Image 1: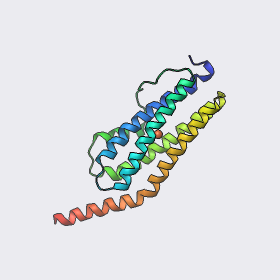
Image 2: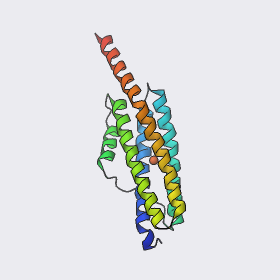
Image 3: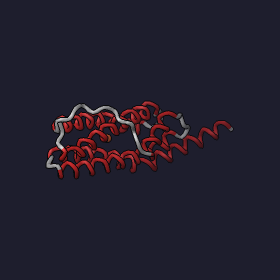
Image 4: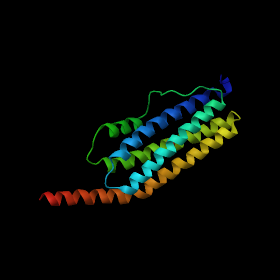
Length: 169
Ligand SMILES: [Fe+2]
């Protein structure tokens, strides 16, 4: 049983686990449908593996606090709703939109782990704080990659679209 002192930390770790489950589902959906952007596909696939590792880390943190294996919680938030929409709809500008939505999702993850690290430190759980900061660094690397790659991906997307329109003329 978690003590009261750890209750908020446990809850936030469970929330983070649910968030990563969403991330895994949606990254896999997006990665699986990318055909023309091999660098983006590879980076997303790498982040799927990182995300799976993050879920294991979160499980380990919860175990260390005496909690049980987390179960899937209902997802909340407009970013997740957008990700769902992206996962469900085959938009013709999916790649272009997906880069922006993924970037937004990474920012939410970064904020989540920053908050978790603070909560862990306050609860005297230094090693959990460090694990959360290590995950945060992976999210920052993914966010930075997406940010840097976006201009090239958007340009390539618009080039492809223009070429397709010319071909139809
Ligand atoms: Fe993540």
